[in-house]
Length: 472
Image 1 (cartoon, rainbow, N blue to C red):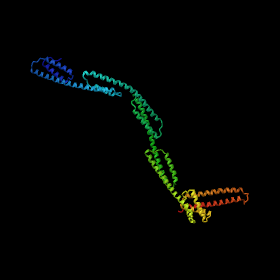
Image 2: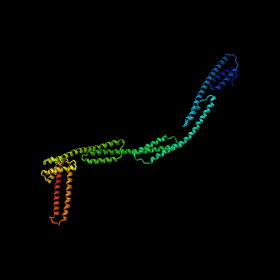
Image 3: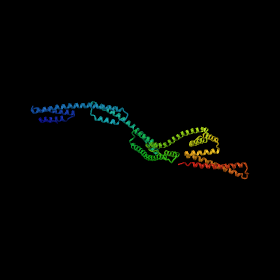
Image 4: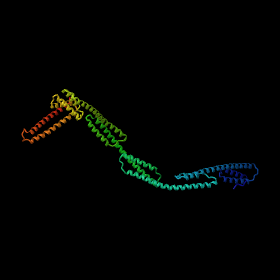
């Protein structure tokens, strides 16, 4: 209730008005309060005193300030209402767009709801219209979210089944032993592909999520742990195989450098080393090719040398053969014993080269014929050829030629001794026959000739062995 007394009442009204100007921001309430103050002011009597005039001037100045502030508040409020209207229209448009979408919209909807309620009021005449739009659009989205949630639940169940299948697949892989490095590589590719497939699968029901994840993680971890164990062992194997293959390289080089071994023995040893190489496991891929190249080059240095040597021997053999053909054609042109012996020695000096039988036989037919023409008997010719052969072989210093000759003579001796025994046995059947029986005479003559031939070949054997003793 406003004060009714004069001066104090005026001062009291001014104080109330001052407080109203400073603090009151609710326009309707402020205007009503101002009206009550003015009505109370007009009821006060005015005695025309200077003090009342001063108070009146102060009062109406406050009324002017109040009206100014109220106009400012109205302008601000009008601006806020328009801004709120604009913001809510934008939010309604976004809600309308959101209601047309079929994917997950829950988070966006919650954010738009929050923004709506954060926006202040609009003009009174728009409030019901805006609210109805907001309510209807919100209901559409809520219904759609409910539908999506139902569909999502079914999809999550499908996802759970898909993840169960991946886990079962991986568990099956672990149940089969993997013993080869190639298997580990191919199986790892499969596992990684399944891991990528797992990542592409969407959410599963929350109540199944942890169990599926832990089972999947444990299966993958077990696979890669077993792989690590295998490769650790494989690494040790790589080191061992590297050590063994380096030893084979050293053995191959030592074999090639061994001057006491023949090429044939070296070839056999290197072939065995190559077979052993193939039986060994692999070294680490970064070492394997280098090791193989080293071993391959060592072996090839020998076999390529042998190949080149054989090619050179082949070329040399062809040249010698051409020379022998020339000697064959030259026999008919020789007339003296010395020339024939020289030609015969040249022939034997090339005996280290295999001569075709037809050419060899043809040469000795011509040589025998030429030597017989200079009045040499058959036995003399054989002695001459034998001695010339030994002389040539002695100059060549090729043990294989002597060994071949020794073996040939021993075979001759054995054959003669076997035949002699047969003939002597046959003579035993005719011990009561007369000594002048033609058959007995013939058998005895053959035995006598065989005995002489055996003695002759034994002397030849000694001569060959003597010829093998080369001069220092």
